[in-house]
Image (cartoon, rainbow, N blue to C red):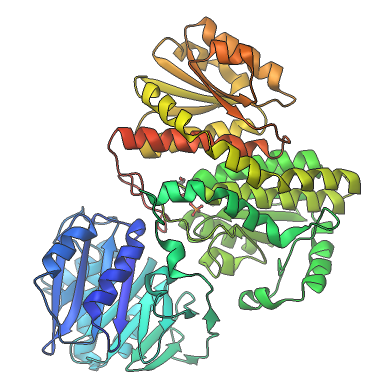
Length: 627
Ligand code: AGP
């Protein structure tokens, strides 16, 4: 995943573009570059490594043009280097690209046969060559783009400029997001609205195979066949401040501490606090997406009830942390609503020739709404005639736009590559959905609904309690880094939390950790346990406490060192644990929201102790928009 910023307007393009790339650096950070008009030519500056290295180079550069493009890269074709950094330039054409051109080998062969001088290992440069050939033929950037679009296969968002049209930027996409920011006499084309929120809140969302031409202050969108299209302008209500660190050393820590508010924001639209009932708001099944926000909530709820009443099974599809949230969703829906639930990781679902029975609701979970495998999965589910529902954090994202129905995490921008508040917000939304389904299916009565809702309403304050123990998690992290391996274990809804806790340690501290169902110990993992193995046992006071306690004793009997998360003060557990991390007493449906916090903080502190880059862990990106 990469970050793209294009700008045409009266401000200094260098400042606008670099400022925008800073907001997008979470999307990729192995190299960066800009191409900006200066004295009628396009001056390009690129640097390997993080954006700060490009800024150091740009400190000595000035530009007198008003058109420019910039890029921060997450390498796919061609390793991280200056020569592979974007923008790529061929004979006056400059362009930046997010995604993968899958037929790049065939295009490369053809270009070489035509004598093209190819200077990088990237697929992107090949597009610049194709475009240069077409502008030579047509003398028109927009026509040239229309002529090459059908040549390209794969996932791509591209912004291009041509020296001979100094007032024109052309952009097009098929897959990764590309958004047009409409300012006052100035226009932005960016990967994510955050890149230009300080200048405008009005946006046009490009759909796949659409082309936008920005000429002076005019913006026109076309179909791939060149037919002008009228697009809806969407007003975004995110404040620029919401994407800053607000005093925290890292975005991840800020987002961990935002979770009480994020969880409250996730449930707020759906909870009737007068009646302690769930009324899912503006799901908008089969409504056009931009209209979802302006639906009549009562009419929409009636429509949603009718549609959910026909649901006989649920199929979750997601990746990574979102797939662990889906696993929690399985326990919630099957226990509360008594509807069968399957969970699948998107990269498997899309290739396993899935069978989707009639009356199945396919639910995708994706913080970014742009994960390529999850996007492909929802498209496949729709092809097979399934009703689809998206739970995501980015409105108007590709997955959000594909789905029939929409639920939102509402957690605000999540910048840290390691997902935290989006996960707990998702668990909150899944709680609301499970209770709504349970009532619709008469699996729970009004009194039980009230119990679930009251439990959920107490979650934000219980999260504040868990966060207040942060210093303990910091101490525990200091001890944990001495261990060779880590086994995270839990039962029931704590099993997916064990999986998520292990993933956090892997992606932040680069240490090997495994999440396991605690009941599986005897079927193999017990052989791993000795004094070098840290066992992180998630054992809240729920109906599986005793079972999990015996698994903990099994581990201890073999010399395993146990770090224990449990409810309240438990004398025995505190005595037998290397570290005991207390959790507030909570309803079993809320325990997963609480027990993941210590695991997030443990991994955060360990990564900091090891001196790693918490917000931008090596080899990763915030949203994997390519396969
Ligand atoms: C989580 O910490 C990771 N960054 C990763 O597993 C992530 O959850 C996964 O790539 C899915 O992303 P999505 O929710 O945006 O689809």
